Length: 349
Ligand code: KG4
Ligand code: ZN
Image 1: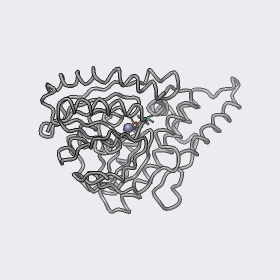
Image 2: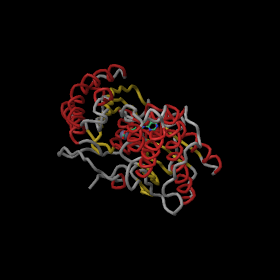
Image 3: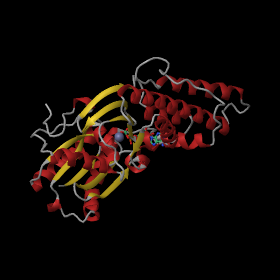
Image 4: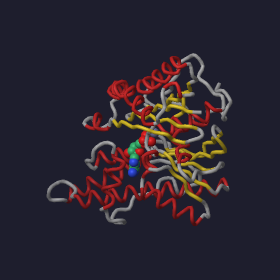
């Protein structure tokens, strides 16, 4: 089965063609980062308009790259949520109208299921069951995964998502949007241990997270250092040291909770997915931990950690091949709990 995937849930237009026998044939991504940069965050209306501009040309480009004429497609998958409703509607309308014109089935895919399954595109994919850490701009969740659509939420962030915390701290440090990769780059030249931030919620049982308090530590430390500096601003080295302390705190908190999730479930495989799973120090910290736990770590290559069309084409292909299809209504969802998804092949209610 050959499936076109379309991702438009936020500020990236991603398209891809996935074939159940041949694997990923081609993918294309257009990032709107520059469009939103001067506003310091994503402007939903601008995002929707740009998806409209970029959608069709990108689809045309990816079909050519995949040597797949329109009539060779067997199905179309698009992101149906969670995300920005206007942006989601663009991808959904494109997918649904193309599907109707070609008389092939379409399916709305859950964005986080896409992230969760992205490591399946790698040469060494994980086998079910496993523990998944989903860390993106909107979500921080630990999930027990027994198969596609068989998800049990083990814990989640009670406030900011890990990526959101990175982005907000990036703003405080004067870095451009999105802050995550930039905070990580700045932390590279930081001195570990000069500042020590807490590891929130690790000294009590449970698998939930809280990252919003770390922002306050960053803000207060920055203000203190600025107050002591003759120029009234924290110097470059201090900013790097603060970035390092913040990154270390987030990484270690995630490592502690992942270890706890492996121990509680007795599972030996950990999958990390979503934008923050591209973070080098997080990968290193988790790798060291899983080795001690005699477990294994799986993740996607960096370009498939952040939003992309390949993960939607892959997830959609699995579900379409199992017979799932859209009904007549066109539904996108701003919020959509992952654990509410049906097991593979069963229609959602
Ligand atoms: O999965 P994603 O592309 O979009 C959502 O579904 O939210 O994740 C984007 C998030 C942003 O918050 C971004 O700052 C963060 O992932 N991110 C990173 C890194 N790369 C992306 N955070 C920390 N370190 C990185 N290397
Ligand atoms: Zn995402």
